[in-house]
Length: 116
Image (cartoon, rainbow, N blue to C red; front, side):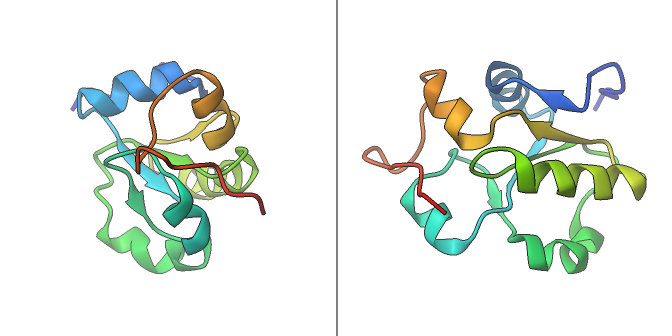
């Protein structure tokens, strides 16, 4: 995969959709299980924040990662931590709230963005 170093740390929903659709990034949902169950981006891997450190060894350091949560705050922290560890990590600006506001799809079809 080509390096995405030219991209800013925070990516718009449209940028993330494009990168995820063509397989350029691994998309990771860091929300809690009830949030994930309520509605999520199809094809995203679910790794809760407390499990991220342990899961880091399983992630491909050569493949860029985009983290997302409900509003972008938790995923921004994950992005910064992974960048500090040498990963090409990015944050979905505005999280799932922004994704849905941009008219992008979530699953299940009747899914919602769960409140905290």
